[in-house]
Length: 45
Picture 1 (cartoon, rainbow, N blue to C red):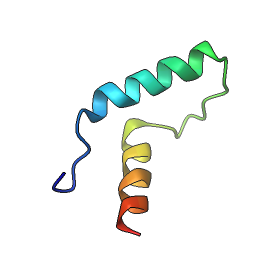
Picture 2 (cartoon, rainbow, N blue to C red):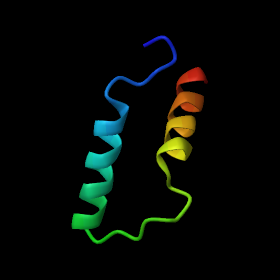
Picture 3 (cartoon, helix red, strand yellow):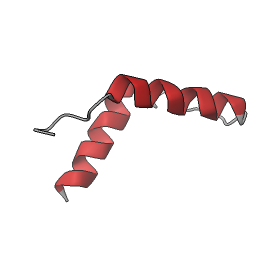
Picture 4 (cartoon, one colour):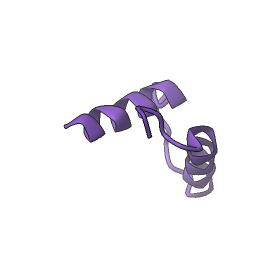
Protein backbone atom coordinates (compact mmCIF):
# COMPACT_ATOMS: atom_id res chain seq x y z
CA UNK A 1 0.00 0.00 0.00
CA UNK A 2 1.60 3.24 -1.16
CA UNK A 3 4.98 1.57 -1.52
CA UNK A 4 4.86 0.01 1.95
CA UNK A 5 4.22 -3.58 2.99
CA UNK A 6 1.52 -3.70 5.65
CA UNK A 7 2.62 -5.32 8.93
CA UNK A 8 6.04 -5.94 7.38
CA UNK A 9 7.90 -6.43 10.66
CA UNK A 10 5.39 -9.05 11.84
CA UNK A 11 5.62 -10.93 8.53
CA UNK A 12 9.42 -10.88 8.56
CA UNK A 13 9.78 -12.15 12.14
CA UNK A 14 7.21 -14.91 11.54
CA UNK A 15 9.12 -15.99 8.41
CA UNK A 16 12.43 -16.02 10.27
CA UNK A 17 10.93 -18.01 13.17
CA UNK A 18 9.49 -20.57 10.74
CA UNK A 19 12.82 -20.89 8.94
CA UNK A 20 14.57 -21.55 12.27
CA UNK A 21 11.96 -24.16 13.27
CA UNK A 22 12.60 -25.95 9.96
CA UNK A 23 16.35 -25.66 10.66
CA UNK A 24 16.94 -23.84 7.39
CA UNK A 25 20.30 -22.23 6.83
CA UNK A 26 19.60 -18.49 6.81
CA UNK A 27 22.17 -16.40 4.91
CA UNK A 28 23.61 -13.40 6.76
CA UNK A 29 22.39 -11.03 4.02
CA UNK A 30 18.77 -12.15 4.50
CA UNK A 31 17.95 -9.02 6.50
CA UNK A 32 14.64 -7.27 6.84
CA UNK A 33 15.85 -4.50 4.53
CA UNK A 34 17.16 -6.92 1.89
CA UNK A 35 13.97 -8.97 1.75
CA UNK A 36 11.76 -5.87 1.70
CA UNK A 37 13.74 -4.47 -1.23
CA UNK A 38 13.40 -7.78 -3.09
CA UNK A 39 9.63 -7.90 -2.53
CA UNK A 40 9.12 -4.29 -3.62
CA UNK A 41 11.27 -4.85 -6.72
CA UNK A 42 9.19 -7.91 -7.61
CA UNK A 43 5.97 -5.93 -7.19
CA UNK A 44 7.26 -3.16 -9.46
CA UNK A 45 7.94 -5.66 -12.23
